[in-house]
Amino acid sequence: MRTGALAAALLLSAALQTGSASAVFAGSPMEGPGSWDWPCVVFNQERNMCFYCDQGYSPDASGVCRECQPGCMACRPEDGCCYRCGQSPDGKHPMFLNTTTHTCQRCLLNPVSSGCTECNTRGRCTQCADMDFETSKWTNFFLVNGRCIRGKATRDVCYEANANGDCVDCSFGYALLNGRCKICPQGGNGGLCKRCDPKTLRCMACWEGSLQDGRCVPCKSQGCLDCAKDPNVCTRCYYITPDNEDPENDWSFYRVGGVCKRCTAPNCRNCKSDGTCRECKYDYNVVGGKCKLAPPVEDHFPCTNWDAKTKRCKVGPELQACYEGWWLNKKANSCDLCEDGCMRCTSGGPSWRQPGGTSRCTRCQKPDLYSYPGYALINGRCLECADPYCMDCDGNIRRCKRCYDDNLPYKVNSEGRCVLP
Image (cartoon, rainbow, N blue to C red; front, side, top):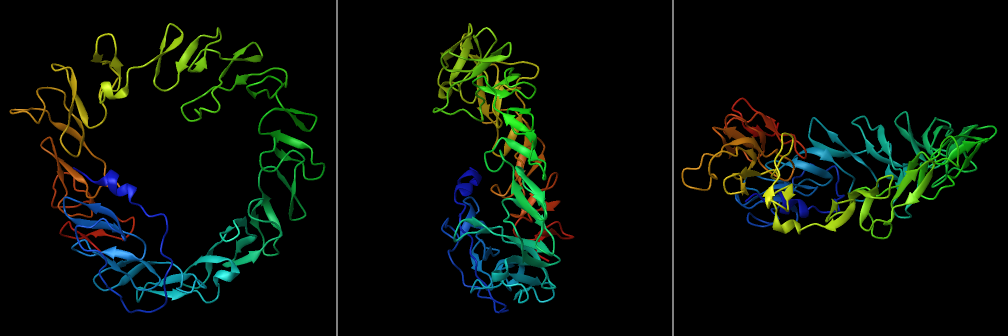
């Protein structure tokens, strides 16, 4: 059984911020094979090895997380050759990668106190801090010509500043005037005004409501989302969607003329113009314009479209009856599991698990960060790539076409193996 989902849950929220310019490789093993403990983030139980370690550590050939040189976030474990840098151990300087020695060096010209968080090999800053995490407040640092300068406005109201600190582009709800950002009368965080004239401060565009004589007038009808031309005439009403369904806010509205009326049908997400239900909330089905409690999902998983009357999975030209990784066995009227690593398999014949099974895989699991390695579709079966860091070996499990390079820059060599340069 693949351990991708479980390994994803082990992601650590805090990243190590250690480092110095030392070229000495610590190389001390942390937890050996067979362990899901920190600093291992993605562990493969079948191979009994760690594939992905937390920042500041890298897995060796046996799957042991080994510590990188100070300041290095990802390295080649055999010799400590670094590929990505973080901050100095005292937290005073960002560090850049010396590509000749593959060591981390301090960015002395742009310390952290100057607002710089990242720099290039020439010591020029490439990114400035937008938040002060100690105070949880926005900074006024802006990147100009490789340096962080203090602007006349903070980053939440100003997007970009020039070398003099004058703002050249303000956030929505603010107007640019003489290098500063002035808040629109109805602007700012949560305001109705999206953009206003910098001299008169009259609103020119609204987030919601109706623009009337330089002001945003809220829609008159309760539940109205759009009344751009006339605040008394609603053109679009609020209704509950799968993305905004909330037990504390369970009212939908439907439009009649230019007015929004509350949908009173119980457990309804979206009403028709006559007040009957068009779409129900989760766990309910529309029956005669009303919402009826659907049978528990567990009763018909992995069927995606269950017909309660016929007690069968619904099938249609554009209807996938079973979830990915399952196939519809029409004879047994059930969704049978595809082979491990297979996302879609044929529905003809008995299940592959049964003697003489003829079900063949047509699409394999797509590899990602948490499902090392990839699969190759060969003769209707999904076979795991031989190289643990191979993402794509389609056609030949021993010759990789594409390697994982999200943490370490693995490349395919002439033999089709994933190696670090």
